[in-house]
Length: 421
Image (cartoon, rainbow, N blue to C red; front, side, top):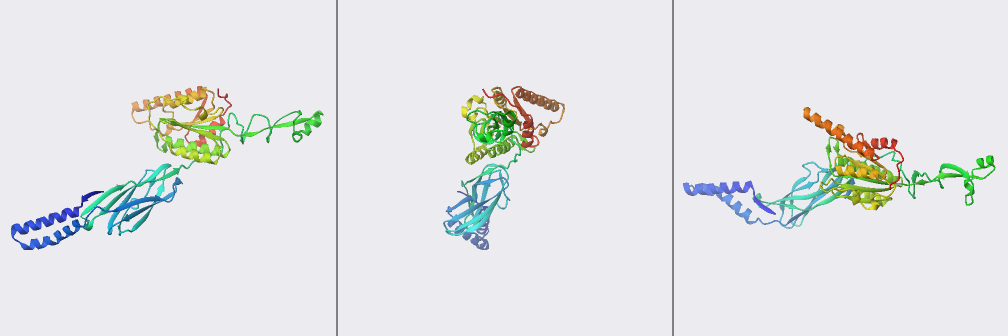
């Protein structure tokens, strides 16, 4: 802790010094008598002042929550000496908010006593939020000396985003072998009727179509389309993060990816993640409840990382992009490396749909003729980028109006692309 003199100490020293000097210089003993209480207070106060033995810690009632929840942080002060007056204030991350008066408190803490205070914190944004450090101020006797220090005590709270629940997903180009909610093109055992063919050895009697059999006088059986799952890979462009009036492009990316991942996991699909930016990270496609938690933890660590290094999808391992997977991309279409990667995926035959997270309606054009010309040139450049992606087989739609609106529009444009090479 750092010791510093208070204005009270300076005032006492100045008044006592002036009274003593005036009494001696002017020969007035009354001034010396006036200075005596001040001198006695200074001697007793400073004589009993020493580095305090006090600590502080903070604890939260939960370590995981959702946006909009209230987290209670408990600040505990402990003194190991004679009663002292202590002031405490806690620091919080930008994703948390609290009343300014609630974040600081003052009180007397006795010898060996612990005093706790509960601070309610409103969670306003997703991410890994921290409560701490603790700023501590201890007043010495008579408040002549103040000791100030920072206790590096932190508690981490993982805040998961609130997302739009999708009512309709994206139909896959190819289905996999596991049971799911998508009707496969292949003919096998299932519920969805496919076609009728003549009976062959090995066919089950339960599949005989008696109406066709009686009409043709030959055994015929029904074939159905099995219900299978699919592979979905979420491609997140994390090279840049543009601030908009309603949030940021990275915020739209994380919320949209969370909504799509939760929807497809509920329908028994395998979901993978690729964070393509300054730090490339990936999560292999899987399914199940445990994978839901892994995706949630993965998305909390997504952030925009600036980098000059050129990157392409060759950096990703083979398992990050399984064959036949539907790639759902979220990108503001700003960085050329991300645009090139999406075009490369489309040219390789992957079915790629992209949500443009940068809405042009939320970008101000500026004032003046030059600003208007620059804004139109920027919009033309983005049109060229979208045309370039479209030529590569990438379907793209603006994220204006919400992710569910964009996905519904993309779902209506869905076609059956060729299988990945």
